[in-house]
Length: 335
Image 1 (spheres, rainbow, N blue to C red):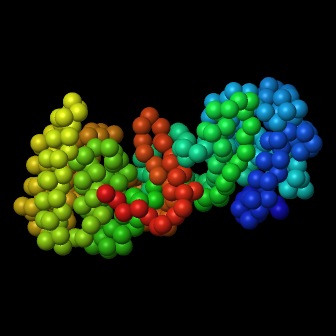
Image 2 (image 1 turned 90 degrees about the horizontal axis):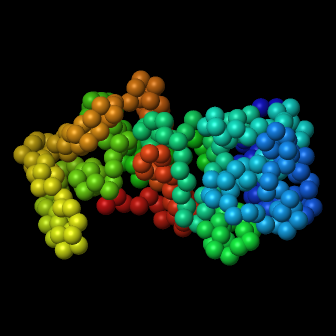
């Protein structure tokens, strides 16, 4: 296998076998010793990492946080690839370099290691990654870290695994909505489509108004259905604020409901929803809420929009792999 793509395709096909080798190494003894030369090469300054000795001897790791554990898994995973599967490839030795944004740059392949809470934090580059995904594929290794860390010493195993293409590392539910509107609007309503795409990229789903607008975008586009939906949102607004007042929490602003109800005065009403969503971006994101640039727009138009995870934005992306590893029942209806 002479190209990175050939190796990636083979990793996808053999992932369960590769994970079996990694899990054996995580139990220490001979299975880890067989990977030792590569682990040593990948260690800082060409030395074995501080965790290696106890892992080899006892199959245990020191009390690591999730990020440090991710570094261990990346190193053992790469060592397994190099020593057991692709030792004849001209691409070896493989490097581990997460600082570049790609964990295995020689293969253009990422390695992500959530545990039973399904979440990882990832660097933020563009809000449109939420719909477009990454520009490289990734191996997702789900570990039992959350339960194991409660009973030291720490013994880790990979309990599930998946291979995702770059476009699949995007928000599943938002991609479903974007795909529907792309099909509906790309021929004659590009300006409205761009407003929807910008809203989906920047939405904060913990914001009541934004979540309500997303619900409206997810529903039918006929005027009668929209009117009924907004009436329901008005009832929900009153109930939510009554509960918040009882709990001593900040109330949702009346202006949020007013903006939703103003949609009823526009025709067609679905376009009123689009304009209200665009206004939300302008008012909450200010100058940060830019439209997609030419490259992002071209990627959007040709993307499969086949995201399989959840994504939310704080200071970094929070990737939620729950939709990938929980029993799938199709995309969850928004709202």
